[in-house]
Image (cartoon, rainbow, N blue to C red; front, side, top):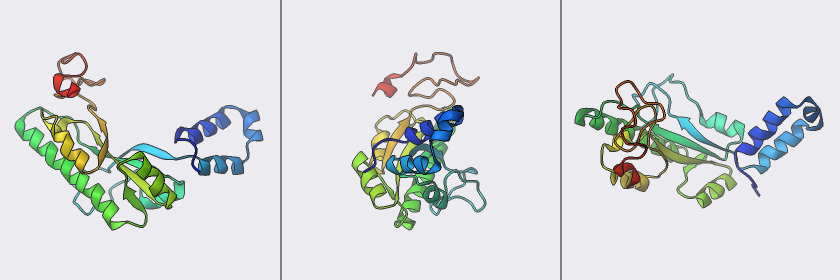
Length: 202
């Protein structure tokens, strides 16, 4: 039975690196045993750039952060694949372009799962993560990094949820209509919303 979450292995390895005496006491077999017992999750992996994805996946030669082979080799039980769109100007045209980019990336993640059913499956619940990993596959948690593609419509998030999105970060680098970013850009008005906007609270 998987007992604890992703930080366990990292903590053990970090402690081993910091303490020579501890490193001598902990064998590679022990580290491997902890890894096998842990529910190993990487909660944030960007889809590779460049961003001209199709429903079939990324362009050939695009760098990836987590290929299916590497996820398997690393013993990952779950990975959070992010639908990331850079914050830009809040105009109807830019928002429409962001929405198109987000939907293309979302479709690519869905296609990845559909075309590799023996290796990955989209998880919508915590129980799904345990079931999928128990079958020897990697559970995919879909994240929306930056609510910018929603425009000013908080209700649009419901559509993303229906399509499997379960992780949401309202901002990235720059304010939007939902919240202030911890990394405002020169175009941003400082403390525009004082944190969350009314749409962000909604």
